[in-house]
Image (cartoon, rainbow, N blue to C red):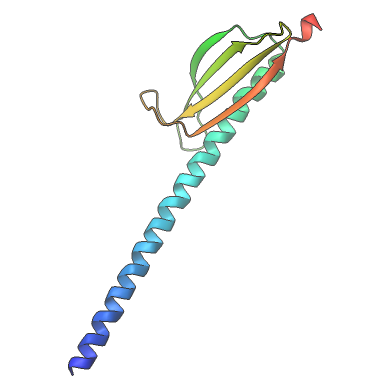
Length: 116
């Protein structure tokens, strides 16, 4: 009888460990999905900048960039480079305006088509 109780205790501990691992995997999957959607938001912001064909002013601006059920906030930073024909654009995506956690960040260089 004692052997059966010990075997049941071992099985219960093993099942508890399996359940904990499954829970951690589910949380990681949600985080990965949120980061992928944040990356899409950053790509969309850069795509809109390219399509607009306008020369962005140097500086930083913050705007909403929702994706799916997430209400992300994008922060776009435009920096001048040594060449007057190009500017570096960085788009960082945050879960909210007050958050300091960067979910995704994309950097590109925009060429001034008018001065070409």
